[in-house]
Amino acid sequence: MAGEKVHLTREKETLLITVYGKALESRRPDSLLQDRFADEAVRRIDYDFARLKVDDNLAVSLAIRAKALDDWTSAFLAMHPNAIVLHLGCGLDTRVFRIDPPPGVDWFDVDYPKVIELRRKLFPPRDHTHLIASSVTEPGWLDAVPGNRPAMIVAEGLTPYLAADEGPKLFARLVSHLAGGELVCDAYSDLGLKFVRSSPTFRATGAELHWAINDPRELEQAAPGLRLVEETSAYKPEHAARVSWFAGLIFRLWSHIPALRKVGRLLRFQF
Image 1 (cartoon, rainbow, N blue to C red):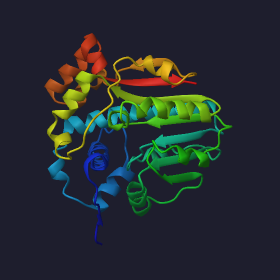
Image 2 (cartoon, helix red, strand yellow):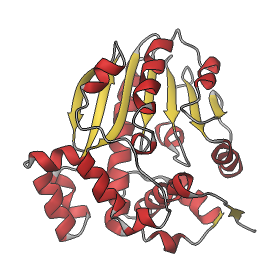
Image 3 (cartoon, rainbow, N blue to C red):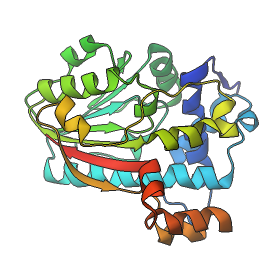
Image 4 (tube, rainbow, N blue to C red):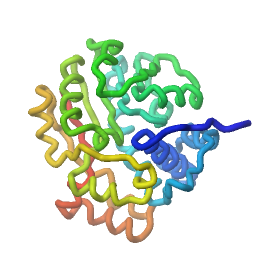
């Protein structure tokens, strides 16, 4: 069977990094994600993934980040089985399949039209899962989202690609439209963005990064009602055994050196 050809450039092409990394990690016997849908999607895509230079360390790191956001999402849905989930800049992530939310949950995957078209080809439809073909920064797509139910907003690997003035405005629109809930995302300092830009994997796509979040509490001012309740590193000392000795050393140091802690963080807000 012929593979699905992809024609993505720059920022959109980075979604292939994340789905490929998660697929590679899911092939490990000790996989955290066990994401068979990502693995099956990668096997169906007609693309030279070798050009992205995704190694085992990056694959494991992507899986660790995804698992942490999955756990936050699952915990919220356990408390709010009638919630909605807004998966912003979803790319080819298969979070809805990994979590398998309760039947009372409505799930919205939001991304550019080309990305949503590819999702339709690669993944089976699910009841109560809605695909919205739009840039997340276009305000109109929120009209299709109910504003009277508890909401979980997930933005994985999104914030650096937003313009520095667009990101806070997006968060403010979400908080204003929705009745209440949580927002979880990963965020990177200026130093963190420099590290990402230097990566051969990232450079292979030609993408650009814009929005550094040096102080997460500034978002509380930009989006009234948003309140930071948890700030953590995805990478813990216990993950060190899953990566190379050098990457493991970085994982061990991450929680002890303030400058490293701010390079990349996971944030959980309530509103």
